[in-house]
Length: 197
Image (cartoon, rainbow, N blue to C red):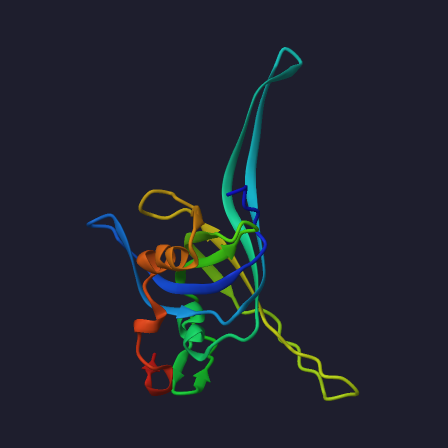
């Protein structure tokens, strides 16, 4: 089979990130889907340094510091408001407060390749901030209002890993790669019956 180029994005999942300083291990809880993926932009940021001597550059260094994330989704499901932003959730009600604190989360998704295979991608540690929301009155045509989730990925406290991925998997294998790390949203409690503070 020929080379596969990334042509899609689906199944974005986030789960609360916890680092245990005693065991020096990371764990995840409350995995949830983040709606249906529409767009995803992941921009690495770098710290630059250079050393000059005898009137010229003798050495330079470029180290990745973090990754800026802009993730467009169709609609943010109710449980995701707690997982991402720490808001209280009861059934279909979300209570946002000025005292809410965004959680560190793991983020994963799968990407379809042009050869029919899939790539599984996981950012072990990220944090998101609420973005702007736009509402439009009904006019001559229908306009959908969809959210963009803005965040930053950093290195994991366990091993400084900022991203992992594996290519040329089946769709089932790719989703299993993500859920093995972050957990399976389908195995969690029904959001209509949940109450999360």
